[in-house]
Image (tube, helix red, strand yellow):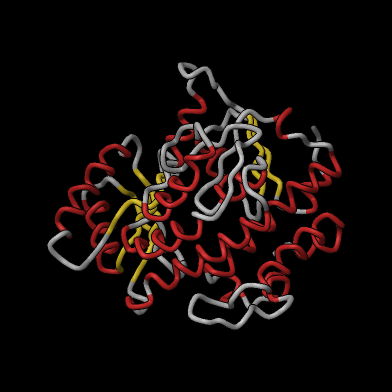
Length: 323
């Protein structure tokens, strides 16, 4: 991840080296007092192995750092000015921290520390489950999203008398919802929704922790403490909250919303619906998707095929950039 960028742009080297130095000053995990080895972030990003990179405590700072490095290239090489070119910023789950850094509401050093703590806390929250947790992406049948949300409430009620959990983690689009919880709970929910012909199919996701569900309550408590000492500034452009699906009104609200986000559903689809709303006088139809991979970009293109959507995730994307 990001090696070609690191070798191509000085600002990327500066950004990744800065994040690496920050992580090297932190404990290697919440259960250890020894510092992270120097150069660990670069090593795991550039050399892997993949299993180590995808561990959430490593993936979160790696994705955040790469996203900000890409943005900084656009700013320094192509003169992108978010305040002049963009009306809103939003990021999906972890991406909300990238949006906060991009809009100058949060410093990169603070963000790197926070997402490392966040990733470690999420992994630690389910250590007692011994791998018996899961996330699954559901393909929602046409016009069945509202029915799925209602059915999930019914399934949660069914499971409430057991130790199993299945909750909506992300509502990504009109055709994709991600559920999270215990293995048996998620499997039961997936099969029920497919049997009732609400979901067409389910795809298990290879994740190390079940994000955005009640199993993450211990992680939310950790983040509440970690965020208490962080100073947030008013962003240079409004940030749309994952939890509220509306622009955050005050920087004072950011810490509590980030805590909520750990256990609450990511309201990604509703965020986009609201941005498209002419009634709210937003009527947004152009997007720049910055960060490794093209998952968000592809979701947008499928949901809004007539919108202008640009993805920036590689050196080639940067070279093809035109304001």
